Length: 163
Image (cartoon, rainbow, N blue to C red; front, top):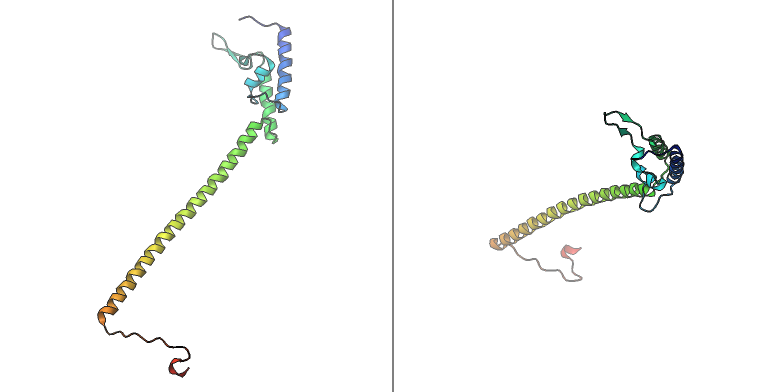
């Protein structure tokens, strides 16, 4: 792989800083995120230039633009801690997560209400069935005894016992 000269490195650093400014200002390309991959694409540099390199002997050396990647991450984190949302998709994701949590809570409450209503319905139906059985039993018992007499229905104008 060919080495790049200092003039190319300088131009790449300027392009990276300019792209970093646009990304952190919220100017995201279509389909892009506020991350190193998009930064590299906007600056026209290879993304691997942001990550440290390993030599054949296992030692780690910094990449030519690693300090810019670290600066980008620091600035992005500072914006996020300040409450500023650089990536509108992140804001949308957070909003949707809160909506999902609220809807899950509503569904849980409704499920609990439905369970309570189902239990109440079961109890009410069983009580009605028990009352019906008791009424039926008492009617059969009264008919079997035969010692009950029907009372006559009073007519208008005649009150019992001289009311």
